[in-house]
Length: 110
Image 1 (cartoon, helix red, strand yellow):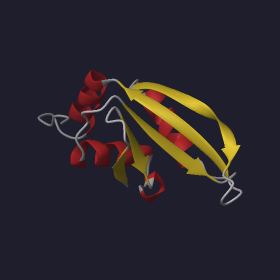
Image 2 (tube, helix red, strand yellow):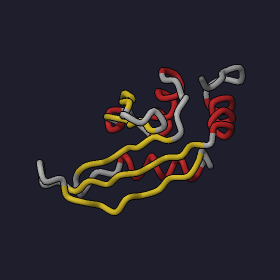
Image 3 (cartoon, one colour):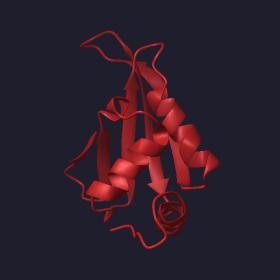
C-alpha cells in the first residue's frame, strides 16, 4: 500500500490497499509510514467480487475512526470493471486512541 497526494493537499488516496492482509494492516501501514496532515483519504476497489475497500470502510466504522462516505458504483470505461469509491474523513483523536490500543501504548500518530 502507498499514499498518493492529489492536487488538493486536503485529500490523499490510499492506493493498492488490496496488497495488505486486513483492514487493520492498512491502517497500521498508514499510521506507521505516512504523515496524516490531511483532511480525508479516498480509496477504491475494482471488480464485482472485490471487497477489500468495503471491508476497510466497515472496519473504520466499527472502530469509530471517522466518517466514511460511499460513492455509488460506476463502470471504469477503460477496464469495464465496476469501481466502488469511498471517502474517509478520519477522526484524528480516535485514530490516535486506536494506535495506542492496537499498536503500542507509547505510539503516536504523525
